[in-house]
Length: 162
Ligand code: RP5
View (cartoon, rainbow, N blue to C red):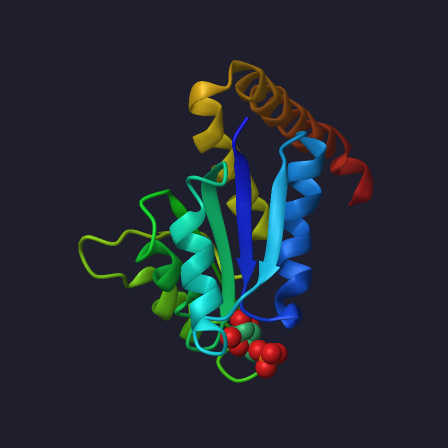
């Protein structure tokens, strides 16, 4: 199976990325993680993106906060699908990163998930890989059913909590 490439702009983004890597591990999907910044280490970010396809990656996840150009910078250097996670920061609560990540110009797409949405980024990456991986697709279906069952269990128990 192809790997998921994960890039975060700073190690301060780790709590968001951890939500993604936990899920990928649970689903048995291989990943590689790097701290590369669009601004602080632009050469390393570009080189990783340019060589990603030939290095066995099938999809990229990029997490960054503030003026979050990382997902766009990675997307500019690969035609693999790129998923952007805007990370919240102290001043603007993630609105800055959300707008920086989501407002890509035509021609260079970034599939942007919610602010701090590490889990959905991993699930979307798996859904992309599962297009050609029936076993992974079955795992995703099973997870969706288990998640729904957990909500229905809460529904059944809610009266007792009132
Ligand atoms: C962004 O700036 C990073 O993705 C991080 O979210 C934010 C702050 O970085 P640090 O100053 O914590 O390294 O590039």
